[in-house]
Image (cartoon, rainbow, N blue to C red; front, side, top):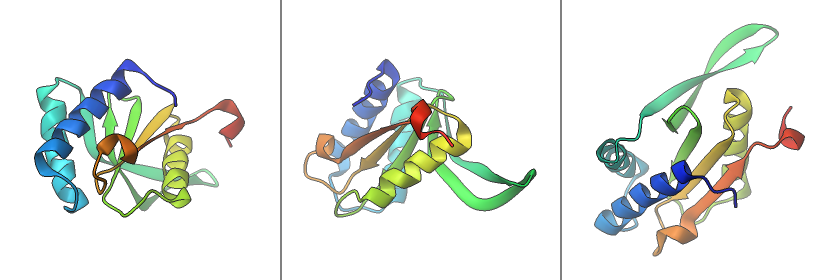
Length: 129
């Protein structure tokens, strides 16, 4: 797994949220609480970041929204599902391709131990379109 100091700090914030709330809530609850933790950690972030799709030179707003972009370098995609599926990883990889950002964390809060619900996705040159 690709690790960075920023990713480790975000994971620490997510663990704090999971310890307080536990599994089983909606993604929106985790998103609001993680935003609070990121603020308290003094990490710069944006929520619900719109990502346009460029098609034949035209920017189209297709409704893609990133849950978080932290420090303009790390995408955070939150889930509250039974398990992370390949489509969730593919979604994160697509977000990296559309934004050009290097890393995403898919964080699934619907697990007993949060570290088992964290997947790192990295945009490597071989994965670029």
